[in-house]
Image (tube, rainbow, N blue to C red):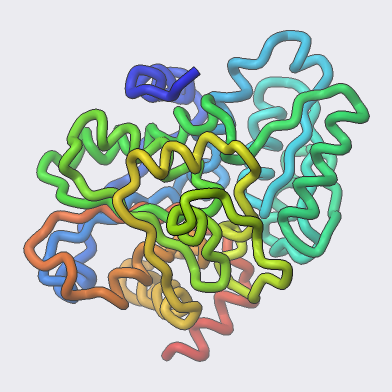
Length: 323
């Protein structure tokens, strides 16, 4: 199955009972900074405070009765795990979620509240992912990738559809990138409806896997010793043969890197100016605008704010240090 605009439109109908159509709001401070029209797609206000519910619900609803009976296993940096736990509870079957041991407490608590079995394993996402696949294979149940899945990508593409339905004159869309599930869906929606819109992905310099893979023309492995990042939701690698890499090569115009200090600044500024609580992974698009404020002059730009699950202690430290 190749993900098409029609798949995304079908996903929009499928997920409607479970996911919100989130606000798209004009940011005055960013618009003034960039001399442009900057609009924030607030997925931090989504169910489980992350866009992940869109793809996950589209996947879980379409499982066979046999797959549901066996239950599912997944790996996550946190937000995908919360979405799977929520979806499994809503649809009435079991789920095991494997997350790295250093996963933020707010994301661990979010998974626990929906009753899924939580397994803390590994120093990073790739180790957790390997463990989850091992469990799924050993127990004969379905492993659900956070990104390498057509139904997941189609579900995430509904973010793009909603932007297009509200912002008719959009010139560019800016999207956080980890494994690429979100930008794959959004880019298909945009390039199918408005091919001239520029699709820009953003990663932290600390975890530039998609950026490096696109430059190399092949999927590169994650760095052996990944640098610390507050955008932990974008960490990890891209599994071999992932559809997201193929889609990104075809539809994404550019992936840009931002500094960790810019991500921290963006968290602070969104709270100070918009009263939006956003995690590091969710705010990298805003960080990119802070570093490139003159690049979008006169344009209409949609920025996906992908999640809001930030630990209270980290948030308070950012507020204290950035003032």
